[in-house]
Image (cartoon, rainbow, N blue to C red; front, side, top):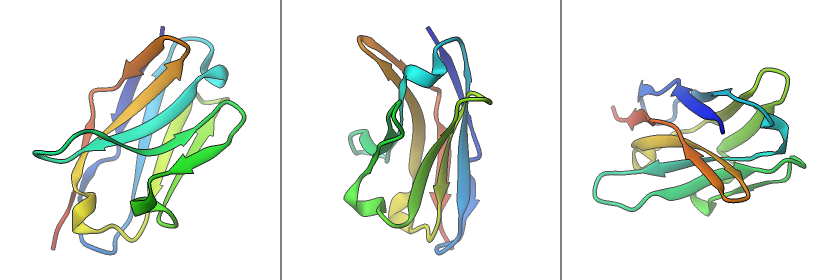
Length: 115
């Protein structure tokens, strides 16, 4: 089992950038699929980006070309670089680990995009 701790959220103006990080404790980091989800007030949690053990990635259409997910197997971290942020990106962002039936979530980090 793994434990996840997100960091890097905050308040940013439209057009700005933030980098979220997910620090992972536990073993077998390299074989998990990792993802970032987000949940805005009154909305369902949605997938933002996923990176698999073979480094294949997929993104929500709304963030393609603006967000980049990456993983560092040596440091046990997963990152989400977010550029050209928009007010509609405002949400709590969650790190997620998936391996077979193991589905683990972090506590979330708030991202607010506002002028």
